[in-house]
Length: 116
Image (cartoon, rainbow, N blue to C red; front, side):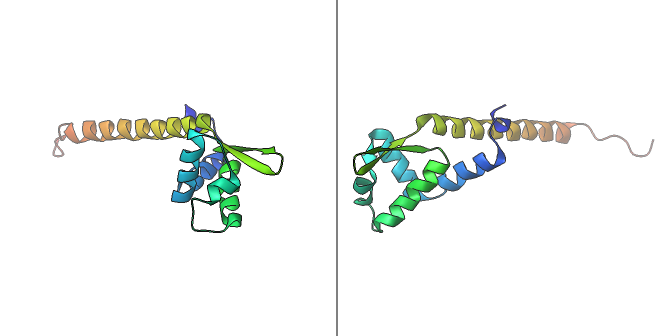
């Protein structure tokens, strides 16, 4: 099961990175097409350094990759990492679905006569 293919640290990094709306937007933009950190910074009301930090968080979570082209750092979204995150959520959903079914089965079992 995918849940166990990633370390706890890797899972934490992915979901902490995805917990921020700016980082989710950066992923969306870079999945559509690669962008330099400078171009990304133009979309946000924050400093260039703050955008660099967001990109670094995404890079540590392997949700984006960076490559240097001359003086620019080009950011690419990593759709494979997002697929892994989706599979992880799907696995957790399956676990909870199975638990809900089991709870339903337990609740529908006839009550045993306690006086016997």
